[in-house]
Image 1 (cartoon, one colour):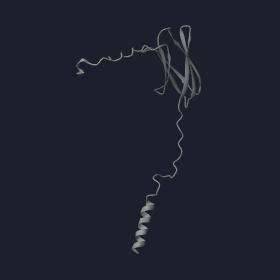
Image 2 (cartoon, rainbow, N blue to C red):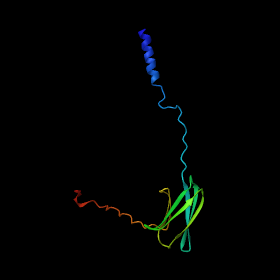
Image 3 (cartoon, one colour):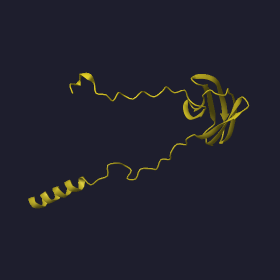
Image 4 (cartoon, helix red, strand yellow):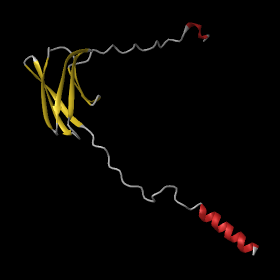
Length: 138
């Protein structure tokens, strides 16, 4: 009887480790949330810029915020009500030779940035001297 009890105990102990660790056995499928998808371009025309945006995915009606910067200075800010996917156009002021960027914001989050011009970046750092230091002892 002890041999049978030992075998039963080993069997229960072994089978006890072969159970599923979550319930239900197959979790339900979750759909991905709808996300905003926008593409666009900036077109120069006689002292102004036309921003053409293509709203490809738009889950629910909301405002599309456009912020137009000249360098680091905010030049113009627009809010456009969008109800469904489609085309959106905005006319923005422009002076040739400066660096401009359009920041497209939806629900407080930036989703697209379009640039026009060349940014004013600092020069790259100079290369280090190749000569050994005088106090290195060599």
